[in-house]
Image (tube, rainbow, N blue to C red):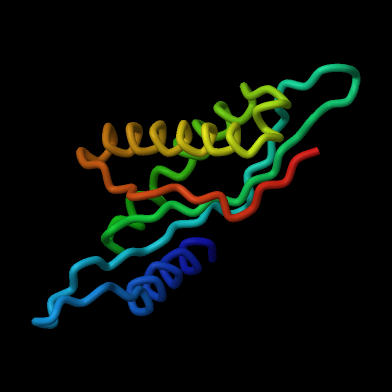
Length: 135
């Protein structure tokens, strides 16, 4: 059932992904997005007795909808890398806007490096935090 849902998602993304068109009608960019489901939840390094956690929703932006298949295949590897990065952050960094951007950038660099190692090409254009909740 999950495979069917994944294939349907890829089909919908392919059909409904819109690109920018040049004046001659050629597609310049045909971006698509891959979202991690469910959201990623992990602890971060906190001080005191209270345990801190963060819940993030992540979308990976790719230029070609065909690359969504590779992202789905390597989802566990990418998810584990992001969780490792998030789990090693301090409370101050998780809670600040500049720290959040540094974390996003580190996640982007790491997943792009991993996917390039696995597929032979850097397919991720951007990594977006669509949800970012911490306590």
